[in-house]
Amino acid sequence: MRTIQFREAVREAMSEEMRLDDTIYLMGEEVAEYNGAYKASKGMLDEFGPERVIDTPISEMGFTGIGVGSAMNGNRPIIEFMTFNFSLVGIDQIINNAAKMRQMSGGQFNIPIVFRGPTGSAGQLGATHSQAFESWFANTPGLKVIVPSNPYDAKGLLKAAIRDDDPVIFMESEQMYGDKGEVPEEEYVIEIGKADIKREGKDVTIVSFGKIIKEAYKAAEQLEEDGISCEIIDLRTIRPLDQEAILESVKKTNRLVILEESWPYGNISTEITYLVQSKAFDYLDAPIIKLNTADTPAPYSPVLLKEWLPNSDDVVKAVKKVMYK
Image (cartoon, rainbow, N blue to C red):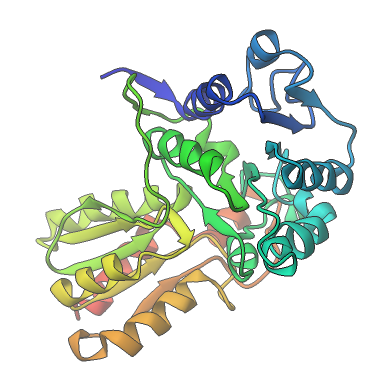
């Protein structure tokens, strides 16, 4: 099987769907002439032309609203944010229009739109460019939230998102665009709302998603040397959440560590903690541990940033704690 970069998987998903459906278009800052800020739309302007690969002014509120309006009128827009930090400028359009329009119109309007771009920290970008908003959007009824961690999942889930008749938040990472992985040349689509067991184990369940899951893989390799078998679940979709996959794994391992790149208050790992204690409490042999960033804005200093983010050493310590070792 061929190996391609994450950015190439994203581009293939968009291009393949645009070839199938003339109502699909890509719009955002630098997506056309510059081939995308992270080159995820390289060559798409040449293939599809300026009416379907559209450069915008630096006005997220404006082009987000245009996307929502065109979705109401029969199109299927893909709106790219250079970073989801900038989506805050257009968040009223996402929350109060895209997410609510189906209900407010009594089902008269579907909003088949995808909002995509990078989330979370990406090195020395400072406090205002290093935020993870998965839990913000997942808190909103009417939105689906997807956070892939590798090229294969990115392509299959993005194709599913583009075909979906509801608004989808599709969150990537600047630090993953160069990641390589095996991706089939033939057609495939991954169902939204299905987690994936990336590594099977019997002693402890580690739940994660997005680029931070790499730290879980590193920890699992180290823990295996100590005779501890970790099962790693990649959620892939945050809303809807695959509750069954989490619960079945915890019932098998009896221990749970959750790794999430987000502030510790009111996040996805908090929701998972409530889910497990309410539906699988009797299976737990240790308290649940969740690992998040420090409860501060992201620092700029690389030394402080390293301390701010959870890492594989933190995962190892957490696993050993729930194993009472």
